Amino acid sequence: MKVSYEEIGQVLVTCPAATGVTEGGMVKMGADGKAAPCGKGDRFFGQAVSVAEDGFAAVQVRGFVTVACTDGTVAPGWVTLAGNGTGGVEKATTGGGEVLVMEADGGSAVLCL
Image (cartoon, rainbow, N blue to C red; front, side, top):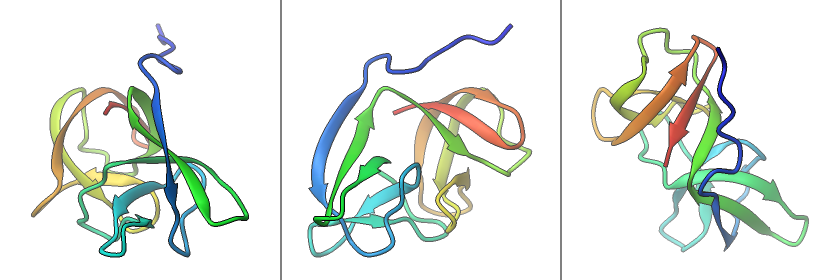
């Protein structure tokens, strides 16, 4: 049975956005203080929920998010994840951060940030 985790505990912050940030993509904090797209192996701090033309993004930093995850080895439980370089996540080989995975199906995962 599927459980809906949408918007439970959702906390959003507005951040200046670097070039390349897309809705639904995982983001890291860039050295210039802007939310930036995660490269492969980067630790993420949230998911861009919306990106405005004025250069700002709403980033979800707490709560449950559904993210792209093509790493078939990710399973529910505490998993060390990192950005995969294409907006999603994968198991970290170095770096990353531990996140609670609620569901994973080989194409997406529900994370508790």
